[in-house]
Amino acid sequence: MLQKWLNAIKVYADRRMLVMTGLGFSSGFPLMLISGTLSLWLDASGISYTLIGMFSLVKTPYSFKWLWAPVIDRIQLPLFGRLGRRRGWALFTQLLLMAAIFGMALIDPAEHTCWLVLAAVIVVFASASQDVVLDAFRIEMFRPKDQGAASAIFVLGYRLGLIFSGAIALWLAAYMSWNDVYVIMSFGALVGVVTVLCSREPARDRHYKEPKVEGSRRTRFKVFVRKAVVEPFSDFIRRPDWRLVLLFVFLYKMSDAYMGPMANVFYVKMGFSTAQIAYVSKVFGMLATIVGGIVGGAVVSRYGIVKSLWVCGILQGVTTLVFVVQAYAGHNIYVLIGCISLDNIAGGMSVAAFVAYLSSLCNVAYTATQYALLSSLMTLARDAVAATSGKMVELVGWPMFFTLTALMTVPGLVVLYVLERREKRRKDRIRGIIS
Image (cartoon, rainbow, N blue to C red; front, top):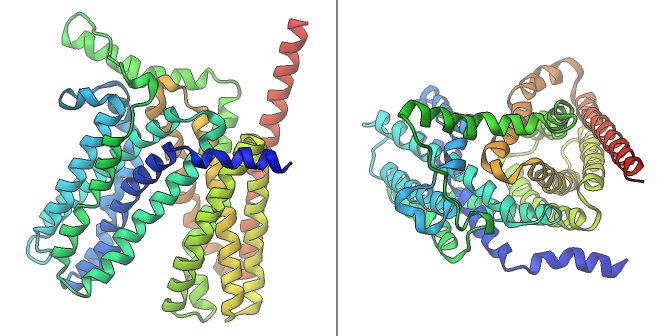
């Protein structure tokens, strides 16, 4: 038993995990620069709360990255072709990120708000495009059984990126102007640049060339649309039970997504100060998420994806229920530390298992496009259904809210059970035909 766990953990010794850490950092650090950190800069510049709130709209491209994912999946950039398809796009998006963040640093928000919006949109577009290519890079670099560990280390790098553009940016702002802070932040893209230059292209992409198509522009465009857009969709819907798969993707993380918008509100209602919330969630919560991700990756490597989804899904529900204890305990910092730590460990584990599952669904011929579509469907649960969470609290109160939220793990597990049973029957039929 011990030897099997040691073999499962051994994947973390792979040098490619260093690549995942650097790429995760590159993926994570832009987010705070167009959300929380940017809001503080805008507030310090005298921008109205209404306008600060409207700045959240600049993040819209993250929800629609699947629209241009086919271009990233099929086209090799001319000036970066020697690096390969994935590394070429990664380097291009990172250089664009650096230039756009540096551009934000040159703008006075109070005098040139529109220019700041434009620069922020470019940052988001570059960041979303980078996510598309880095997800494909990760999936194509690792075997399915190692995807959980790879995603866990990627998330570790992602969290470090958030710390860099969040906590470190705020610390720097105490000693220098926000413009200077953003100049320094722009050099965060160098982590991704160096990582890409020191890494190797996934084997199948090293000599990739899009086949040339003869004919008119219209003919070539039709062929591109068919290969880049139609075929990824067609390939996916040829998968057995693809509708149930999509339903599972939508439901699996519903519990976490539904609780998310109300978590900080709940902590405040329990009497905790913003300083206490920040300390517990950023220190204990961050460490717990990282630990959970690493444990989740090892669980996937040890037991496989499906068993890991079961274990992590059940843990999601159980750890959500611990907040019922917090609701009755009220202002107790030790209970809060326990609740957040347990919830984030389970959350980190479930993310590792779920990302490994999403990765396993992608045909390597259409990795970027299919993963972008699946991850967009995952965020739909967060953005659409979670919008009712506040109303639910008003109707039933905090203890019942967390109980119902925990029960939201059940539909996803029911669909997982059905998918598992159908897959077993298919394998039994194949064995029967062969024998």
